[in-house]
Image (cartoon, rainbow, N blue to C red):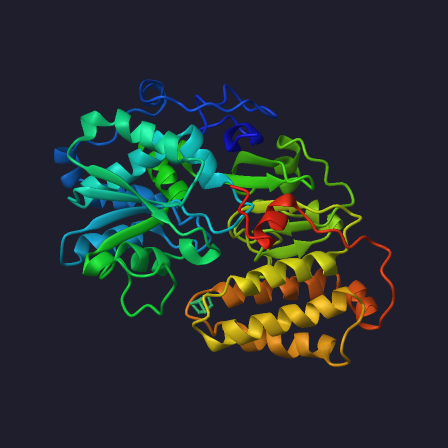
Length: 431
Ligand code: SF4
């Protein structure tokens, strides 16, 4: 099954991001790529270069009013990056980061397959505001979105004041980290590094570089074109137990239960993994209080992250599933920072022994001790995410984890969870 046909798209509200792709708020629809002519009938055309040069301040004000923040998980205000890049010395570069590291997330993939012109509109407008002549789209090597993106770029002949090229990233979890992108495009290995300068000041080959993810550029285009109607627009990925992924367009503050319903997913009695594999568990009882917002339970510990809602089978043991994810995440470390290189495998190994109900006597206590020690100690946020996932297990399923620590048998299955995780563990990406 192709990546495109395995994705479904729906919306909890009348669609805007997927207007033209979806005819109305619907439970599901067969997706199709919106050609340029139809895209322009729905979304208009970006500011022409001459006009854009004079409108940076206006655009910054509109983006600030619309609270446009990075949608790759970092949640950083886009207008600040734009202003910073505009104020830096040198020849600027605009980079669209479409290398989603999260194996289960399908938002950027869906955008590039179905609405690539919205992403390009945001990038082209940003480039024109910065008087920048070059855009690079950073995409995982072998991405199923490549053909769609190339076709869309081929349709943008009228935007010849800006050159758009595609660069393919290694297929690793950390390839989508902003410093990996900068390093990879500068000719080095695409791995994270400690920031001395923000990329907006000194990025790719020392140039002021505006880097944001694909969904953020789509939101920039929507906000500049549609103003108030775009406020709070958000894409989420809902993944069912069978690995089927649904992209749901929604508006911030919408109940998570409505997002799951729009995807046609029944989460009754199911644990829910929120925010990505390096996200947080919430219990089935908590789902009814959860909203698609920066803090999903009004609790800073449960963040929206990459806006993934992965529904677990109630028959899966959350300790076993978390151990599998933690082992995979530990294996994704770039091996550059001690707490990440040594701390994450130690945590994952302790959790794996606990999952088998054959722990060492110190394993349970060590989890409590080690989690705070790895947080905030890496050059990137990779250890924080992994520690946050395990910490959420302690909160949501602490009693069950303690049963494992006590060597009590677990009646729930030890089957490997979602196919996307299975593929990731075996080294084969599902995308
Ligand atoms: S924290 Fe981990 S993944 Fe991030 S740079 Fe350091 S070693 Fe690499």
